[in-house]
Image (tube, rainbow, N blue to C red; front, top):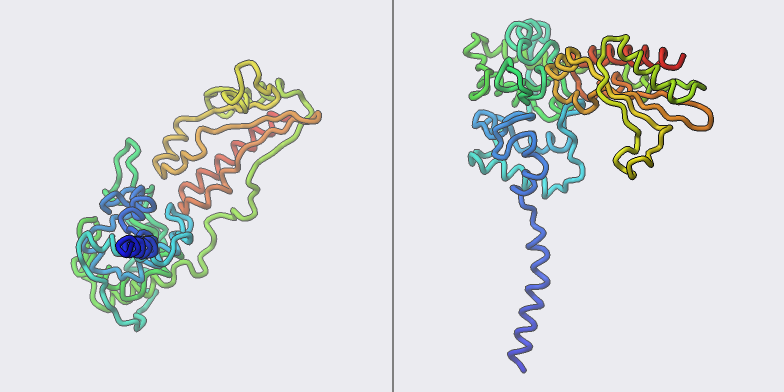
Length: 348
């Protein structure tokens, strides 16, 4: 009987301790679930920057990594991971560190003093070719979409609020001083910059995002473009087709909104989607940033209800803000104008 009691006590202790042990965050699993899709399974990059480079890990601190995970990169691909617990964030950082076993560096928190005006000139001469004017970032996302890339890695946006909040002056300075071996970025010494030049560039980087005009007045843009007409939906669809061809786009297909969701022949014929595309425009947009594919091909939705036909399209200019890319925002503005022209003609 005593043996049985001891056995039961041991099982009870294991049962009480096991949940705490089992709940310990697994950094590798968390990284693979949240980070690997963009940064690569072993951190060698893709959509996101490579995290496994020794040059990167020798410069950035654990606090930089923590803030990067928490804040993300507003307007870029990386979201803010607010749902992760502190322990889970620490586990991811520890796993990333395990690739090279390089400890977090320790820096002074003394701000860098420099001449931002001179730093702006140096940035334009040595940095803007990759990081873009005013640090808006390189073209695209790092994904090869059956096209040549200007560089093996896409330079990150330096005017990003998340990046500027995560990176201390010391990290910016060390990055410039050392460059980023394994990427096209040379060290400041290779470029012939002095210590004061480096400080000046850091001072300029700190001005980015302050007083810079918005890339677009996206907040005032409606999410959808909508016109209403009393013409029957069959005529409205024909009007859309004619308008699409009139702006040199090609019709792709026409389908009912619930097609494939109900038995054939039971579709709601008062709800129609018209798909269309201009392939030159498509390839131009995808070459700028493959993320534009989330709302391609172009489409117009028509719904007849209560004697009114609504002709609708997503507003590309409203969506364009998430890309944080001036070239793509320009293309989205052009697409909005095309949509408006099609909607106007289709409602006549």
